[in-house]
Image 1: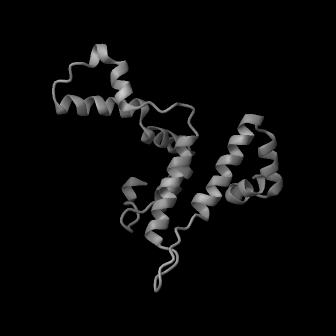
Image 2: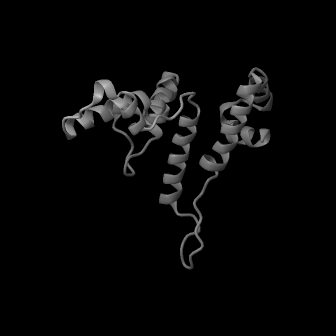
Length: 156
């Protein structure tokens, strides 16, 4: 698994010695997590192409591949968090004293927003990217595309 993690994350290290030094600095628990995420990153994001076996079609479908890679990347980021998943309906039930009765759809929507702020997966991803150094945030934003268009300069 170590060679897969190194292959997946090689662009983040100057050379093998740099990778080895970083790996050696981790605790045993972190080493396992690092290898898991690094190897999954290689298989799912860097090399994870969506293949089809349909006559007269491309074997790799770009739209499906890119969608799969994006979902995989966000799943890996989410997996790095220590928080356990909390189901929305369980969350509602746990807070029954100060939540019920729910007056209408608007009140339910507000509760859902409150839930997402506390337990939503997007929160973990946002926090992950906010922790990146500013130069890396800019580089990530510039590499992003929406409907084939790069982000506007005001968003980077």
